[in-house]
Length: 464
Image 1 (cartoon, rainbow, N blue to C red):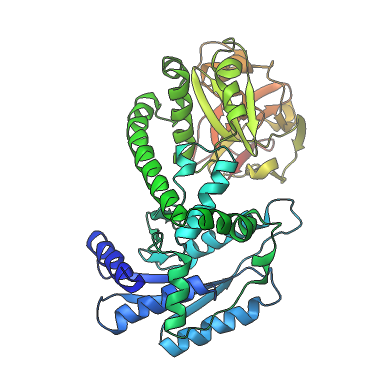
Image 2 (image 1 turned 180 degrees about the horizontal axis):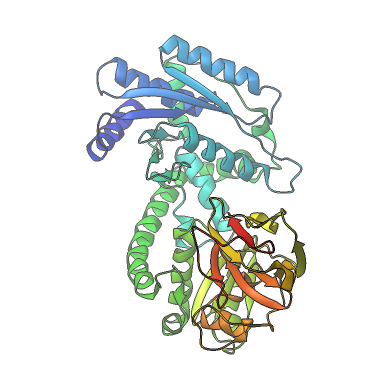
């Protein structure tokens, strides 16, 4: 089957599964692969073989001195084909110590998701030989079935707007060889741009492309096809595994998206780790290494009930609290401190937790909560972080307890407690600010629209 016939079949299948009208956006880099994809789609549309809206996007990484020339080349080609064209720049921090390839890829996908029209299908030009390189890299990294599935044909990403809108990605050329792509380009006298970094074998993919793949294909002419078939079989097996894992995950989930430790421990170790990996994946959190996951059962799930174990990787942590497994971003915590407030002070709380204001003899302005203080003379007002051995009597509570006992009773995880603001007058706690919610002390909790005007009275307000 020719490249054009194959692409026509792929687009037809896509149209059957995608609501019309279909808008295809080609991720156009000026290289031969994406140029051939764009031109072939243009042919299908121009010859009325298939009906869809066609446009192209170029992502400018700023990593090459030739990037501006490539962008102009893309604009020129799209102008000649009368295809709508747009471009956008991304920033790649080459001094960060992270892999440039991975950074560029992540930045490219993020920008494509951001600027592609909602509901559109972004077509990527990866082909059979790219799939071979991907699978070989995954083998080198010791990947399991999911990694050995290589690049999937389709996937979706949510728009950053926070709504339910998505951008869909599709790779229609995964069964097409690089040789077929070059043959198409020669037949249609296409002109493309070469990325000079493709010759740098310091990049693993370039090393495989230049030195490894040709040797394998010379020895076994259909090697890339065989690897592509193996990747597809791995993907099918992974899909079946995911289906069962999803059922197990659903039975373990708590309403707050934590996992039941007790139910996790009822699973065998392989299933336990499989469920945890999927749980992380559903939250777009990168899975830790196998070595870190191996610590999960012994060091965290089976730790003593009064222990507070932590397992950390990248910017994430596994935590356990109240028989539940949490995954959280490494928390920023306020250091113990005390700040006194004098009227008419406005005190900004650390870590963007909000601000409190104290005004003498004034009613509360618009705020998240207000606290009427009838006598400022009995002690200064302060905001305190830390010191959980102090006793506190919440409004309507029959007795006082140390704060740490209230926190345990209220099921506040230990890593959130350092950021609880304690509102104190003199040595007495008159209220707590917990995640933007105010817990008033005894006799301090009423909100009023009117207030008796004592010279020494005041209103404490909080705004997020």
